[in-house]
Length: 334
Image (cartoon, rainbow, N blue to C red; front, top):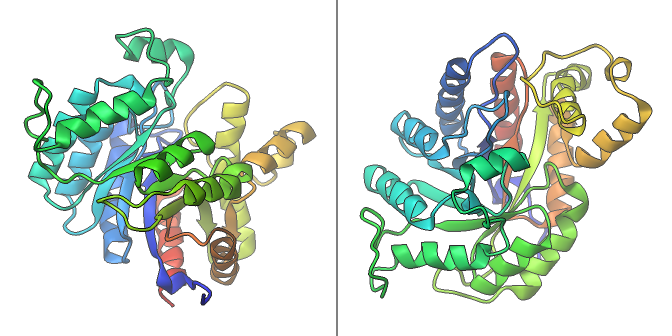
């Protein structure tokens, strides 16, 4: 089998609609649409938004609403969730929301699903009207959701819009559970390598080993998430990446906050132990100049044999963020 090259695969965007220090959620959502419009022009395949709650630095909590906003402001790029945390919701509500989105923007909507809460325990309790819903019944919830899209379903409850519509469902994961389930169901699988790099290869192996062809897919389809901070030089990219490092540092300290501007030396604000933890969480991140980024993206493709990569870029300055996405697009195209 010939070696995959970057120009052989698709590339996409994962956006958390970051709220930067000194800015508002309104600013973040405006920037999100601007990124979507630019990346559409640069050949990105899909633009996914993530569901997080109670996070001062993330504006995409009402994920379906933001998907509608982005889809309305673009023309061709696929727009979807990376992901909707299904245990937070009644499956019927998600079927109706995404049935509505598909009705408004036919052929452009993706439904990526995760089973984590995407927040802390107290906020998760506030989200879930059924206090018992903790992700253990995710396979049953998934079956219920898929049944609502089935045009010949037997359920007396119907999702209108939703019923009979083709909304591609993806499973998302950072461990083996969803990898195995996605394989067994013949669904496409997206792995969160951008924050769980050590589990990437075992999860992809599990998915491919367990894959059973379905009406949706004849062969496994893998998308991997990767953090990319690209700039004109390696030094500038490393400086820009300190915003992402501070973001994860906040999570490690259980003090989530807004996205911070870059700092000259991350070692001045993080202990050696924290730096080692950051290295573990961000180990697959790609930071550097156009040449460095292209080489590391190719190496990552060699390791994962992915069919698609979805790029997350936590960069404080909006223009620098756009520049990073343009450099990545050039790496995949040339």
